[in-house]
Amino acid sequence: MASKTGNDATLALRRRQELELRAVRAVEQAAGTVQDVERRRREVVARLDQEVGAAAAAHGLAVVVLATVLRDDGLAADLTGVDVARVRAFRRGADGAAVRARIAELGEVVPRRRRTAVPVPGNAGPASAGGVSGGAPS
Image 1: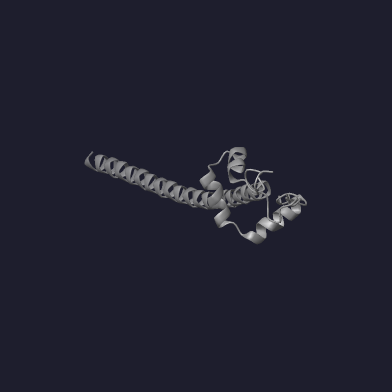
Image 2: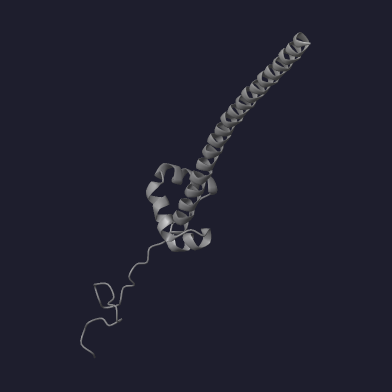
């Protein structure tokens, strides 16, 4: 009987060791899977970060183009939903050549005509702010 009990104990011990070994292998496999998924996650996040950066740069360029065409940072800020300070920051960081190229792609910008002073008859200089020629009343 003693030998049967010893054999049963030995078999039970071997089954337990095999179970432990399978459990250790399962843990190693799960750890490898976690590492693989973490690596893929880093790759996906890096790719998405690049896409966000490119989209943000395109948005900034579009805001600068709009502000340049409108010639009014405040109006561009109102239309785009960003702060005036952000519009100005976009303008400071924008590449002038890229802005001009994008404006050219969108179409021709009609230059604004500058207002000139209307000459007052009998006065050689520009008109004064009050509309008075500066001479003595007649």
